Length: 150
Image 1 (tube, rainbow, N blue to C red):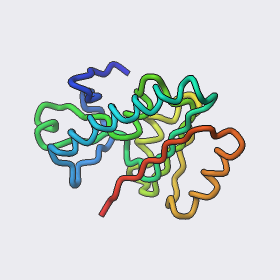
Image 2: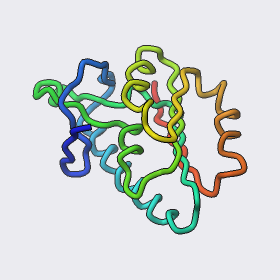
Image 3: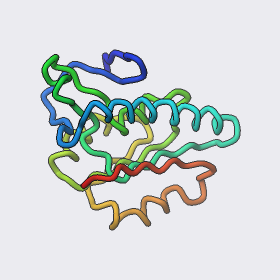
């Protein structure tokens, strides 16, 4: 993926796909750093206790975000789906749900080929039960991520 890691952020040169820009502020980058730390702590704790560590993102977005500052230097930063995929130790399975078709298409291109990754283009409220059923029977540990979007 040719990404740079700078102070816990997953930075990449801007690609031609849409990024989340609406509501993305400098403090959003702090939140992404916290995700990196928490996800790593979570998977580190579970890696020897579980045979499977799932990640479910109910509002995945396009995978990358941009602040105005990042846009000026032609960089984008990994949002929750990319952070989850880059977590070390890694999650074993991923389900990303995004209802907005303008975000779903780039998300699918960015993460759809990742191993054990499913990308769903529906409202999370309508598929949460079936997504959780995919985890049933194999879940010893799951991380569910929800960003509040206004």
